[in-house]
Length: 418
Image (cartoon, rainbow, N blue to C red):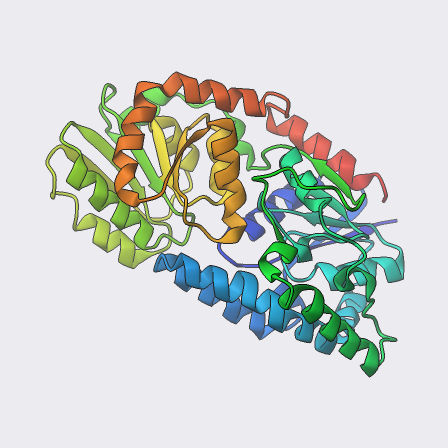
């Protein structure tokens, strides 16, 4: 009998969807399984999710980190999402009923509660796959098996109090109006009015007291198979026309590009006098690409190579010595698999703070408080490059070293209850 697995993701940035695609590729190897993969906004006909995603990407392209964090990571979660949950839960459950999945997998925020409700109601396995290293409350659910990258995230998952309103008040088809009102008021009492940042968010910068026994498994870097293929640095440099004996810097900001890219290029051009090659990957952001192209001849010592969206990022990691990037978990995981030291900004949205804490704790690169410090940190890493590479090797040595072993491990975890 064929089993149906529903994978729910969203088109915010590229991380949620990319992890969903990796899982789909891995799980399609199972026998008698049908994979249904959908964006939450499409699955639930939810235009709100689409608007939020567009706002998020716009703020990040502008490098408006604090606005994105305050408005989307906290204000919406604390004040808007509880109301949406009580208004839309029945409709969402009906949408899921139409698909009738035998298993639920979610890589996106905000829908953990309703998916957990459906999983409990129908008795089907439910997996929450955390695509960041830090954790928000809606990515923790008593009904779920949590799949994350590192043990530090497991500790953060276990730090949430399962006796609070979010976890104890059920919302389902039988919920009365008074049940829904009590849920919203309870959420506001517990979180929105109770120093919400601390109560709904956990970073990995400290060891948290454990308050629940939710099932959670750390699987290490979950990246595309191509990042497990050993690259030839010399050949990749030749292909990109980069001098073999010249330092090379890779600047990336995920697929959304943004002002972070050209601002970083300008900082290095102003500070560097010795020969340096910069690979500036602008993703789908054509405006940023044009701005970087205009900077190519500003400093004759700095060879700027502007790139749009690329599908050979693993070769760029190999060709470069150091990566400067926004601290997204996706970039961190790719860099780890490619043994590339990272430089990133201390100012970041809450969901990216876990990457910063992980880099600092294990000395996998450097973190700057001010962008003008980036060139100094770059040469600091160049001078002690092997030290950082060794630290990276130490971090990933306990996880699968090839994509086939990783895929087999993921299939074993997820297929066992089917």
